[in-house]
Length: 374
Image 1 (cartoon, rainbow, N blue to C red):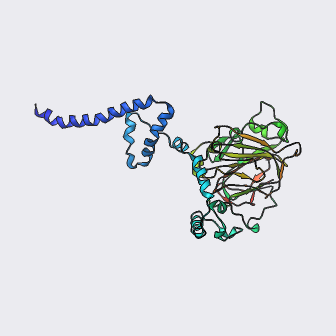
Image 2 (cartoon, rainbow, N blue to C red; image 1 turned 90 degrees about the horizontal axis):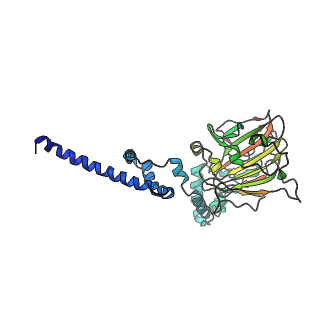
Image 3 (tube, helix red, strand yellow; image 1 turned 180 degrees about the vertical axis):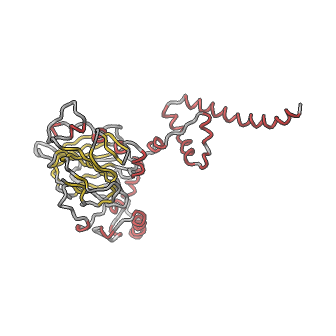
């Protein structure tokens, strides 16, 4: 053997050793490509988790042999958030020992900045479990209701977005939109609504605007875990219909809302529709991770976060009956419902063109403060 071949011997052996894993990986990936789509997702999911978690791009060389990780959005959507939320709900109902209540609630107060001086009951030992603590009531004078403006904030929270609805698209945060029809669902039967039907050729937005010269407006309020968890009526209006969309329970914090398009259309939500003095009015309570429980005080038939549901389905319920032809009247500031932990309220309503919001995107707001007026 010549010296050049002898010198190349270790290099050839190293190249052969390096080449073998690539062949094995290609063969393995070929086997994966023959699997059914559900099986392929199941087998690639752990590898994808490692791909995003391991430092220094440890698994990046796999991309050279044809493997591609599942996207972060798809990976997050595969997390069983409904199951986790039901487990969290069960945990919330567990009664805490008297001696453990103060340290547990104090940690939560410190973490999320809860102002217990506003609570109707400040004594932490009063709350038997986490659920009671999350749904604590406020002192009557803690949230004065603004009487000068026609629409008030239904809850504490942060303003994510607001403005006119254009081209049947609504912004969940700046630059990220969702379909108005996907969010509210198909047009409700006109027998249940107090306003006349629109022509079939008109857009979904035009079907909701019932009076000439009016526009359609929206406002998105995010409730953080430390906020007051009840929500109230934002104006004087009549609720004629409820539509419940079972769905995912992904986080709705502003960062996630920028990341996932049509997040609010994927999540479980309860849409209340009706009318106010200027036409159509709706309030939608959107569920989130650990917030599968959405309660509407006057609707005892509503059950959210059920174990089984059909994707894309919805359940309708009309409050207009032969005995009650008007629906459920709500006064501005009246208690309407509650969440557990935190979530989102979306208002979509019709108003004259001179309606003005008194808001800035990103600002903190409290229940009873003005959203806008004519």
